[in-house]
Picture 1 (tube, rainbow, N blue to C red):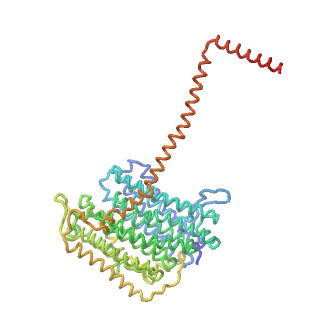
Picture 2: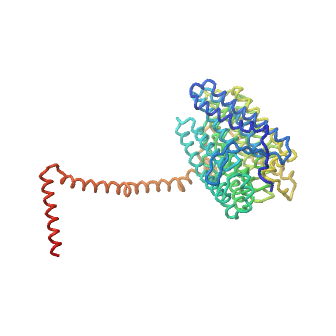
Picture 3: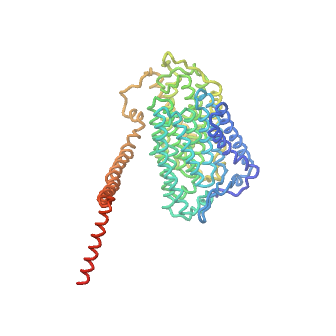
Length: 635
């Protein structure tokens, strides 16, 4: 396996590498510290900083393309962050093919979301603060993917958690938004414990947390230690990437403004867990148990997300269930080892474009329908919102894997690899593709086709150009993103980080598998057409539904399970501790105080302030001393 980092001087690329993070971080600082004085132009500054960061990312990408494969890693140490004894942590940056793709995704899609937000948040009185939080989110994610050390990753990891809390709960006047922000924050703390313990175990084992140094030492650690590290990193990934069993926060996160949903689901937060696993491939390559756990978790989540997507009437929550499922595909691919790392990133990048496209398209639909999110209140919107419809359709064709679109190439590669490595996982991935075709076709039919079902006071209309232009760009990326697979380019490009691996052998040709996947997807599309395209869709959701649908509507009872397993016992433990505090701790303190108070009351009777009483006490004491001396002399 090749070393993770090859020595290389930053050279002319040093300044852009720093600017990638510095620009959005500076934008966030100016907008937060400048206050209301920046209200008039804050949204423009926030957008310009991310656009500038994208330009730097593109410059860096083009710069390493011209280099030999073994010189495509750039390391840059900014300063010593802290030291303890012999342990020194430098705040260093690592730019290699993996971080290069993430930078293009984060800043490119992030810039389009910023442009879209100028129109979407136009009438919000706190728009400047919103853009400050967006800048903070982007800067934190960039720190995460550019750090050369696990401690630096943890810094960005926590910054992403803070920014997501601020953005999900941005409309905190809504109790549901405030609750969703707290839920996301608390559940992610569970994953953060996994990362902190994992980093601690890495340091205890290797006496360093630097990627390149740990990569060079992994062969010296025991299998048990490597498995423990891998499982702790997987726990961290489950929190950020909303994988089972820490997935329940993701659908509630839809309470935030729609651009936040696009940023979280496409370019930043949920991709962090996939990045952590792939970046830590030198750990997972030494532990089959942890790698198998990664693949199983991804498979479970991709089926759960697809199930939820089939049952939701809220357009954003349908897309959120879809995100769970698609991230599950990426985690599954990462769990397949060297054979799947590159395809996990391929699907991640492709998904970043078409999912941002669809989330922003959903925001455009809401913008034209008085912020209604219920798809049962839509229908026939393709004529009222033609640009939104066409661009959304491009994302739809990409996600279901229509031949030629980006999702077709990326998802098929994952399914092929899964079938070659493990038949059961491969069949589950194939089933997920069919269910994706069903629920996404359901969304399209309920939203854009059929008879109109909106109220008389709703007048659907196309969004302004500042919102539709980003949709057009993302739609184009949804169509042409598959170019990354030409000549297996992405696998060769990522080889210095992920390794090349051996070609997997299938009993049939990849063309046959692609045909099978396409047929399975077509079956899902046909079933959706029969249920929702040929029938009238009621404006109110029916109550006499199957247990399957009911479970999907309740997010597979994830909250109920958490209440039973975590929230309920936590409340009982808290109540018990409160009782102990009152009865034992407070009781002991108050009892001691009462005893001292009683003794003080008795003492006060002696200290009455009368001289005659003190003289009598002195005489009595002298008499007692005299009697004691007499008794001793006769003894």
